[in-house]
Amino acid sequence: MESAEGHMRILEELNFFDIKVSLKASNVMRTVEAYRLFSDRHEYPLHIGISEAGPSFSGTIKSAVGLGILLAEGIGDTMRVSLTAEPEEEVRVAYEILKSLGIRRRGPEIISCPTCGRCQIDMKPLAQKVADAIKDIKAPISVAVMGCVVNGPGEAREADFGIAGGKGLGLVFKKGEVVKTVKEEELLDELMKMVKEADPGPV
Image (cartoon, rainbow, N blue to C red; front, top):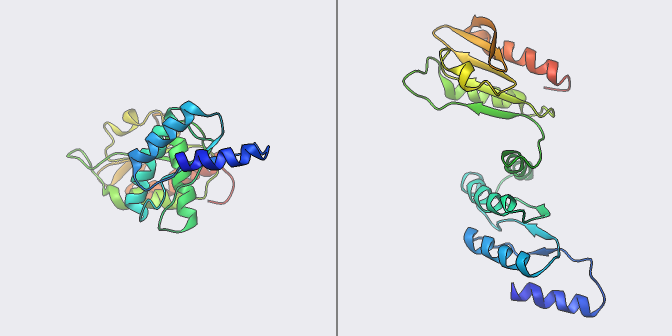
């Protein structure tokens, strides 16, 4: 932080005050503490991020933890998720962080339950198929993929749209209310019909 303050003084002495400060580091808690200290001392806007966070999986976790803490405390004006991955993945992760904190919604949110003893459908491939099918949607909707028809619609009643698997059959629901019962292999298609009505753009 001392280095950033030194550069700020140079700019201020030149009567330049259009300054935005970045204090990014690869250590999550060191980064968080640096931004906290700076925001207590100065009014300049902050560009936040965890630098060199790593590959997609571990880097996403580190970024979500560090940026989530800062954003929840009202610290940060712009942000960058730095992953050893495609730039599009960085943008997707950034939007998911903002979405999870209720700061900004863009595109769909997926709600899916873990596998358990009540699960009556192969959840992992189905959830991935749904994620792939809705990834280009722009509307801020929530979509649930649930593993059983008994608890699924109720547990995911806040979702805009959802499906719940059963033995050969499944439910399609909207805001917790069952719309229809369909064959297991028709669940994805029926879900996407409802989703397309909410977002008529490319799916």
